Amino acid sequence: MRTTLTREEAGSYRRDGYLVVPDLLDPDELRIWRQAVDEAVAEMVDRDPSSRVVRHNQANDSYYSGVFVQCVNLWKTHESVRALVLDERLGKLATEVSGSTGVRLYHDHALTKEPWSNPTNFHVDNPMDLFHSSQATMLWIALDDATLQNGCLYFLPGSQKTCRFDESGTLGEEGIGRLIDSYPEWSEIEPQPVEVEAGSGIFISGLVAHAAGPNMTLQPRRAFALLFMPEDATFNGKQSALPDEVVARTKVGDVLADDEHLPVLYTRTS
Image (cartoon, rainbow, N blue to C red; front, side):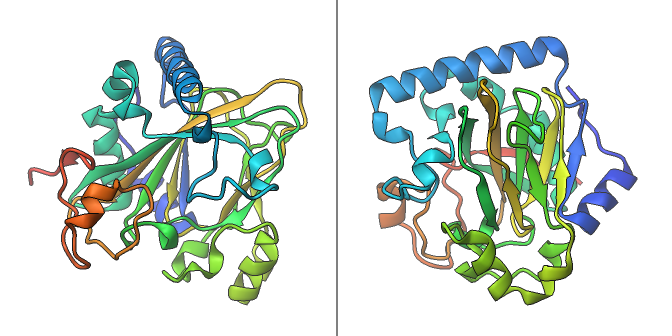
């Protein structure tokens, strides 16, 4: 596994809002990740078909029901995924790229674009989260090659610099229209497709606009994402992926220091 980033790579992330790490997993690691995630997804879907929903409870949206299959917090339900996700080395990389003092795992999610799946419209993530921070980051791991044909990611480079924490850039069937209406300054940014090989990772700022194309192939396009939060992030009142019992005991402004549901992956020692 790739365990360090160069200064140039960190600078690229700060400039563009995303960073491709082409050599994140070696072939043996990729095989292990694929097996663990496939098993965990199959178990979760078999146990709870409602897990086949998109983020933020939009299961009843007919458009988004055809975007992808998503299963959240597999680290809580499958021991092999737990061992992979809670790897300190991933936390160290997320800390490096985000510039934080350390990170907690916010949640994970498996994302499978099945054949003929709809595109994912342009959106930004962190405004929908239970904390707001310019240091929010996600690691998106390609379990299959991601191509123009099967739904690779697209970015509006640099959009994280002017993104706000309101929800005007969140998901919706008319997504790209809403996004540009809210951020007219982004209308001149050329969308950048990012094709990557299986085993690659992409660090994605929680404030950068991104999307994914449709899957126009006969094979699924699998990915697995880990969302990280700064270790000192505070609660903004939104539940998002936080369990009911944690919301009930957490006040707005409290540091989100719940080690059971939001485990620390890495903290700088100096």
